[in-house]
Length: 341
Length: 283
Ligand SMILES: Cc1cc2nc3c(=O)[nH]c(=O)nc-3n(C[C@H](O)[C@H](O)[C@H](O)COP(=O)(O)O)c2cc1C
Ligand code: FES
Image (cartoon, rainbow over all chains, first blue to last red; front, side):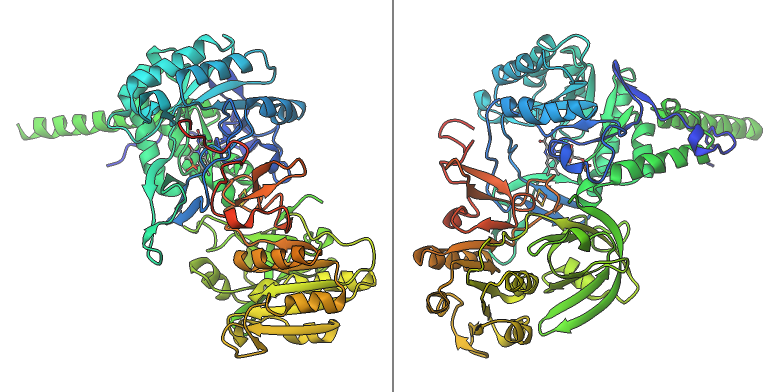
């Protein structure tokens, strides 16, 4: 038997308070873009009020301009896609001069994602951004190969992941939260979470894409120019929900920006129940550039229908519900045994 | 004009040789559309497992409260097959107009319009605007076979001359569009060549045009996932005004490029002198 949800009478959707917090960052709306899926943000301006959404997470910025990988850079897969963009970008100087400035001038809450090939590069990025106004938080994309460690991805090694997060935290203004973005391609994601938490991460973004490959049956070789690519979209959602669940269970106080396959308000709700305080929407934006506003409205309607007045009340609620369910089952079993005795 | 996202209605769908010709009631899109613009369609219906948008160059538009947009497509895969199965009255999520359109000459110069297959679709609206400016328009339409030619009759009605080529000789000259092209450019005294079609054809057309001192404007068909500039999948190496090669997005910087700016031989790779290209021992 299912435990009933702790719901009141249905509310008028306008009564629902969608505001949330990611560490010290207050957000009026819990739905943000995902890094690399909204370019610099302004490309979405024709389809969305960017100042009204939770915020824009920029594509990962590196120190120098980067051309990215050769084409083909994407392959559609069942309910998802594989991409190998290779962090194409203009470099931090051009980003600050043009993109960051535009976002600031348009009142967009901006989370700057940074990426590097060495701990030193992450440090210099943090130093360069430290005195730039208009940065709500830094997201550290550690799913990059470490050139100093034979290309081992930072996010897959608790030690180098922690090292990067530590230097970024040290060189970022104290009032700007630092989120570490985790890769699901690890044996134990809780161990990586522990390690970056101890290194000073104020929160986590999870999950990044899963490494995949598509082989073209006509050419009989890998389809992507970069051979392998990152899998994203609804196909990975259960993996992402599981990862958020596990980490929230281990560190309930560690804020999580949840992502991976979110396409509807219902999907976002799953992440909140698993323990995310806010969500990013990536691949779904390619399908529907106005998805963020729609998802936020759907989430509002869904909370209202359940009589939940505050979004913050459902963060991690899945764990509470599960514990109640288990306790109720145990009580029933005990009662049954007593009756039989 | 900024693109709009609208729920469009299918008001017409018919076969055109090997292709499908779809008319959409898509208010708001025709007004800002110029020749060379494209639309991006979501496929598979709500909640579809096919997430990526399909991009199609706009064949024709009719502005007004019943504004319509026409596209021509071949069935390449699951998404385009789904589109071909639509019925009148079905709804589609459409974004447009997208991209940078063809640039029109200021003077009434002679122009040659070259197409490969359904690449002819956007050229008729272009031809109309060119002729309205007093330009002479000659057309070259090429395809693998006769059923893959598009718009030959309309071309004949509206152009100073029409030359047809097919790979198998089932219609017109057996061969490629670039076989008769030099003579057509010379005979017309053309200053500009406009082209739309597969990448290899565009590369060859741009080379012929450059060899004869004509400008070329090429509309590329690069694989796109979003059509609006957010995914970075649709890039190709293009030389900028500053001489520097960058990997640029064909959806926002294109789909129309000056033929002389595109590094045709390097499409599908990142030339070593590209801004931010990987360096030996580096990233
Ligand atoms: C085309 C593409 C580019 C991406 N680029 C980045 C990036 O630059 N930095 C990053 O941290 N994540 C990047 N991601 C990962 C997304 O931010 C997100 O973590 C992942 O796609 C899962 O979410 P989704 O299923 O909603 O897309 C990219 C994803 C895609 C599809
Ligand atoms: S198709 Fe997405 S950036 Fe061009």
